[in-house]
Length: 129
Image (tube, rainbow, N blue to C red; front, side, top):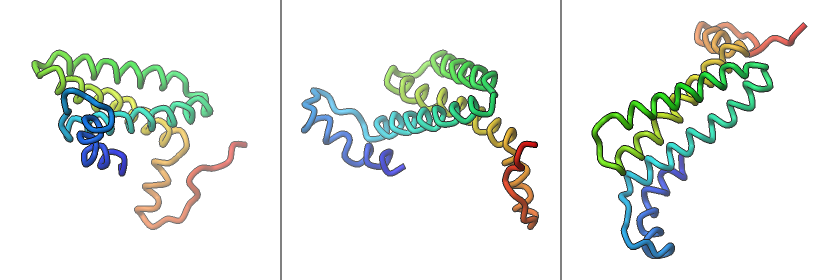
């Protein structure tokens, strides 16, 4: 998240003064692109967890839903830069959320969170027999 903030604070200056860009991009656009990249990184980590849990079908479904979400954004009449920024947020966010939900479900994490909220002190995941 610090990288997302840094992209907004110094990104436009770096583009023009360090990288020699002819046109500066807005701080908001750079922050949206950085946040979308963060979502992609988290999705890649979750993909490894799902593969380790033998839940490859969720990986396929999650990436497919992310692509569908991006196509929906492209169908909305926005400017090209806004479309790119929103699509880079929405697609990876959908993918990441689907994967995170299944990792929590498969590991018992949802039950553990519920137990903690109800005051029960139980382990996050039980060992396989």
